[in-house]
Image (cartoon, rainbow, N blue to C red; front, side, top):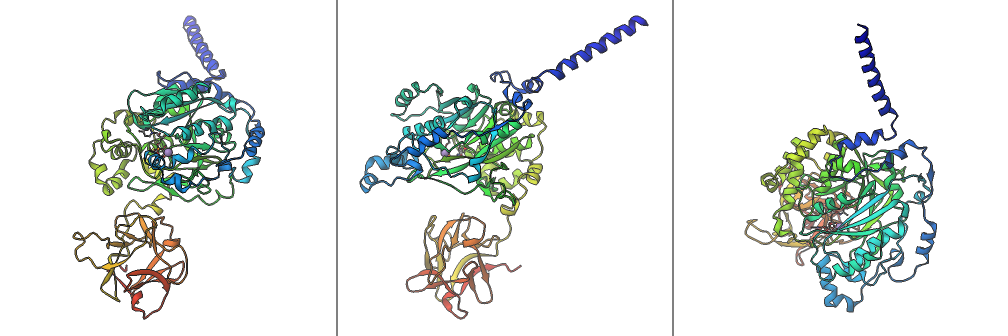
Amino acid sequence: FFVFFLFLSIIYLINQQIEYSVDTNDNEVIRREEKHVSSSTPPIHGKLVEILGRKAQKIDWHDYAAIARDNARTGLGEGGAGVEPSTQERNSGAFQQLYRENGFHAFISENISVHRSIKDIRHPDCKKKLYLAELPSVSIIIPVRNEHLTTLLRSIYSILNRTPPKLLTEIILVDDASVKANLKSPLDNHIANLTKVRIIRLQKREGLIRTRLAGAREAKGDVLIFFDSHIEVNINWLPPLIEPIALDYKTSVCPLIDVIKWETFAYVTQDEGARGAFDWQMYYKRLPLLPGTAEKPTEPFDDPVMAGGLFAISKIWFWELGGYDEGLDVWGGEQYEMSFKIWQCGGRLVDAPCSRVGHIYRQFNPHGGLDFGDYLSRNHKRVAVVWMDEYAEYIYKRNSRIRHVDPGDIKKQVALREKLQCKSFKWFMENVAFDLPQYYPPVPLPAYAEGEIRSTAADLCIDTKHAGERGTFGLDDCVKDQQGRSGEQNFELSWRQDIRPKGREVCFDVPSRGKRTPVVLFNCHGMRGNQHFVYNPNNFHILHVATSFCLDCDVSSKMIFMDECEVEKKTQQWKFSSYNDT
Ligand code: UD2
Ligand code: MN
């Protein structure tokens, strides 16, 4: 018995010993995390955890010498000013060629220093903010497909000039098999002088998602930051972006995205932030900030969906989440995949308003990608099937291409969701994107009125003739058969109380109040304002609520405009094909 007791005691002591050694190990958290990381990922730095253990001393991270150098700069485009092309430049073949290749006026980039200064447009309170003295190191990953050289170089120098060197491990450019003739060797020559910048070249085109993955696999920093290849970072952008990650490695952070205008390269604000979302056709959308956010202008706020291009994530967390789905091709959908899995699998996504990064929004997508077929529908299908549960049906209802496209092999993604015990999409909709259905209802609500809008003053109908944004329009002969003619006379007074050509995302918009003010088409914002109309079936008026003016017309010139309402005026009386008064 004694021997048996001794044996039990020894077993007990050994157990205690093991537990004790685990409990007191400084790297305990890291060890636990390491277990989740696949063996193909690089070794992990212990730094994130070191920081958590230390007293959180905060410091002012501003580089005042760099700010002074920026302020002293003079020249074209400095201070983030826009540069207008001369008429001669604008008419040149090179100017137009560069626009076609890039979807922005890359020609302007040649006239601006790659070291230019930008304007500090942060909220004034950001200038006083302190951040943790110990922050993790970062690897910045930039996919590059046929980028314009000086625009790319400006992205790189803006980072090198405005990032604390001790936090910047490296900038990794990943060239997605670019085919631009004058890109490769000038880029190599430049980079040869920059110790922290390196380039990985892919043998064949992989699309931006696998290109980012290739960079992430090589990254040595604690935090991965993904950027597009046409950005400029603003003053002190990095500390606010990574502090939330130092505090909780499962928090991922987006900067506020400013606009570098595609026409002039002017650096301007978009607004003071919004919360990212989507509609049920999978278009990226923005929701207003929640009440209370504006009162704390320097504090990170929850963001349901990232825009996609610019964000920071702990390297450990990125690989725990399996990185990106490698089955996503070319462009698009990855912002949903990453956002949904961050939230559903126990993380958090925030926007840090004191971290601002400018981005050139292109006028069109110059990447092509025809070899990949309908990659966007396939990407959306993969995301919907893996992450959206029963809500995927709302997507399929709106877009049958997504319903019918084959998502390919999704076993790995499904297994990951299972392994991490990720929450349902219902949870995401109820807890994170809880106000989304208010703006983008999953089940479409009925329109107030539909069909043609016929004037009672003459046998004429409103016809937008497929005009684009900012387009004006007027009256034309009513189309008897909607299929037979080239006009666009089929409208909807939607449940949002805006008027739009059926199936399109442009709305009647009245930007000002005054006699005979024109009506233009504008991207629908769904926020009423300038796009808010109501129909009165008793006097047949179409009333613009904000101006209290009525839709009016001139029969001989076939023009339409807004004017003071007059009850008996025939030119202000309109009939929809159908009106739903419930
Ligand atoms: C937005 C995102 C972008 C990405 C995309 C959806 C922002 C500011 N930008 O589109 O990052 O999330 O939505 O997927 O949120 N590229 C390649 N290979 C390709 C195509 C593109 O490497 O086949 C590179 C390209 O050089 C650029 C980046 O990927 O650096 C993003 O492409 P983009 O700038 O054309 O996308 P964008 O801004 O329209
Ligand atoms: Mn971009």
